Structures are given as C-alpha cells and as structure tokens.
Amino acid sequence: MGTTTMSATGAVTRPPDTGATARRGGFAVRLLGLLTATGVLLLVAVLSIAVGAKAIPPLDVLHALWHGRSTVDGSVVLDLRVPRTLLGIAVGAALATAGVLMQALTRNPLADPGILGVNMGASTAVVIAIAVWGSTDPAFYVWFAFAGAGIAAALVYVLGSRGRTGPAPVRLALAGTAVSAVLGALVSVVTLLRPDVFDQFRFWGVGSLAGLPLSVLTTVLPFLAAGGLLALGLSGSLNALALGDDTARALGSGVLRIRLLGTLAVTLLCGAATAAVGPIAFIGLVVPHLVRSVTGPDHRWLLPYSMVVGSTLLVASDVLGRVIARPGEIQAGIVTAFAGAPVFIALVRRRRIAEL
Image (cartoon, rainbow, N blue to C red; front, side, top):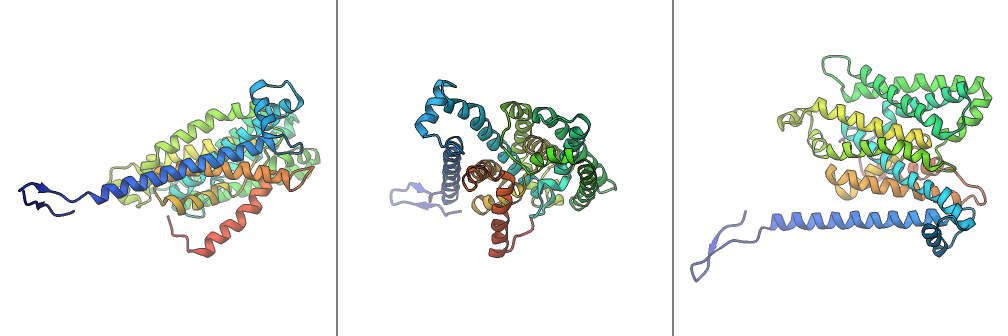
C-alpha cells in the first residue's frame, strides 16, 4: 500500500490504487479476448454453413436463413448445415468444458473426459442397441448412448470411492481405465462376431457431425445445458480445489461435494456429446492447455474461454474435413485427432506442463 502525504494546503492525499487499476485492466483484457474469440467462432460458423460439397455464397446463405426453404440452397442450409453447425458448437463446448473439469478434479494435466469411461460406456450401449434392435436412427440410439455413459461413470465412481479416503483422483483414473478396457473388449467381441453391426457402428464410432438431424441436438441439449451451468457454478470451488484438498477444506469448500458435482457435470457433458456425435478425441485434452496459456489457472475465465475455443476448434475441424477431401469429406473426429496430437506434442515440448 502507498503512504499518505500532506499537500502544502494541508489536504491529505493518497497515491492511486495501482492494484485495483491492474485488476480492472486485466479484466478488460480478458473480456476483450473472450469477445474476440466469440467473433472468431461466429466467423467459423458462417463458413460451416457456406462451405461444403456445394459452395453457397454468403448472400445466398443469408437469403436462405431469412426466406426459408424456398430454393434448393435453402433446403441444404436449413436441413443439413445449420443443424450440423449448431451441433458442432454445442458438442465442442461440452467436450472442452468436460476436459477442464477432469483436469481440475484429478489435478492431472493429462486427464481426458474419457478417463471416467464415459466414451466407452456410450460406445458399448450403441453397439448393443444396434445388435438387438438394428436401428440406424441417431435419435433412437442416442438414449442408449447416454444411458451407457451414465452407467459407466457411476460404476467408475463406485469403484474409485471404495476406502476411507473417498473418491481419490488416482483411484478414479485406475477404475476408469479398468472399466474402459472391459467395455472395449465387449465392443470388439460384438463387432467382430456381427459384421452387420460393425458396418453401422463404424460411422458413429469415428465421431462425425454429418447427416445428423436437428432432433439429435434437441434431445441432448437439456443435458448439455445442465452440465454447462453446473460447471460454471463450480468455477470458484475449482480454484480452491486447485490449492489442494487440505487448503480447500480450510477455505470452507466441501471437497467431496465439489468432486461429486464435478463428476456429475462431466457425465452430463461428455455423455450427451458422445451420444450425439460419437467419441471425439483431443478436444477435452488440448483446449484447456491452449486456453490456460492465455487466461491462467482461474477457472472463472478458463471455463467460458474453453467453451468458445472448443466450439471453434470442432466446427473448424468439420469445415476442414469437407474441404480437403472434396467431393467427399473426412469426419470431424479424424481431423481433430490429426490436428490435436501435434498441438499437444508442441505444448509438451515447449514447456513442462505443471501439475494442476
């Protein structure tokens, strides 16, 4: 703090509060960055609607959005590309948010949403639904995928919570690995014995936004919204948890409650996202590190930034997949794997990732 001085007239003067000024400046810079990132997301969304096997000029896109399905381009925009873009925005935000939560809850910088067995649980349920009912309608087996994700996450939590210490991060990771291995073996057995099931499952299993109706988004949107709001509500508690369990308890935070609610949010976000489009890798792993290099460890900024950047990365990957393989396309899950792996390797090589 600055010292108080007295002027020649006898008036007491105080130096300016440089700390408050710095905090206001940091807030303004972060807010400007978030608005800029949102602008980039809007630009990528416009490209997603305009770019494809049939290029549609921006003016025609606006005409289709305003006048509806009066033309062929209007039908393409409203029936195919708008649902695809909205689904990419929602799923990208969910996966990135789930990644931030997993890294915060386990204090492991290499944690991924799939560590709770959510992805493999959803995959197993989809395989069973296809094998038993033979349905290829995403709006039908999305419920099976979500149920499988929830059951797998609950099983991992029960196994990882055994003992007097409760759900320890390392125990949860080991339980998730074990459950994922068992479920992965089950998926392999079914798909190898039933080639017809494999032919239908492989399109979902690679992770794709293509060909999904708007009903898939409306089905999972309530779960995505609930998980996102829960994650944002935990932002302050996650900051306390990052200081360690003992320090968090000393600050008045309920560590067990935070981990329970955080696990629930991860299950809602990753389960619904995987159910909608299939397992997509690297979004939840890479985005938190990219954002943390800009915002720092404060989860009050890290979470909203990650939502925007995750949406941008997934939609941009989907657009890139349409461009580089015309007239066909490469699925978004493959593009994110190719793009995410080098970025993550560069992050690791550039500087040592500190333990969270």
